[in-house]
Image (cartoon, rainbow, N blue to C red):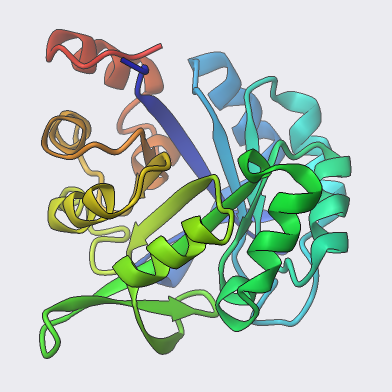
Length: 252
C-alpha cells in the first residue's frame, strides 16, 4: 500500500504567499522561498506552488520565484497558474518544477492535457480542478479563473475526461471548504476516487489533525493538501504524520 502524502500549498500572488477563505479576502503570509525552505525542514512530501492571479491577469507564472523555490526544496514541486501551452509547461519544468498543474487552460483547450502528457509524460501533468457543489443539480461544478467563473461542467465527468486525455494526477479543491477549516469534502473525494484510477490530492477545508485521518480513512485519496493551518503554525507536518501513524494511516 502506498504511503499517503502530506502536501503544503503556496498560493502566490505577485511573488508573495497569500491565503483567503472561499478563494477571496486574501491575506499576505510571507516570502515563498522562506516558507518553502521551512516546509522542507518539516518533512513535507511534496510542495504545490500556484500562481493564483496569473490566469486572471493573463500573464505567465513568475519563473524567477519558482527557480528560487526549487533551489530550496528537494521534494517534488508541482507548479500551476498561467499555463496556456506546452511551451509554458516546458518553462516551468526548466525552472525546477517536477510537475505542472493545468486548470483554466485545460478546460478551454482539453488538447493541452494530451499535448503535455505526450511531450513530458503523464506523470508531469496534473489536472487541477476547482469544484463547487450546486444544490440545484446535486452535483459538483467546475469553476475557472481562480474560482471566479462557473463553467457548467460536471466535476466528476471532467475528471474522467482529463484522465482519458492523459492527466497523471488530479489536484481537486473544494471551493465550498477552501479556508473554512471545517474538514475536507468527503463526499466529493469519495465520488472522484470511485470514478478515476489516478492519484488524487484533496484540497480545501483542513482545520485540525483529525481532518487528515478523516480524508484518508473515508476516501481513497493519495495526498492531502493544506495551506493556512501550516502557514500560521497551527499544525506542523510532523504533528500530522505522528497523528496519522497513531490512527493507522501509512505515511512516509
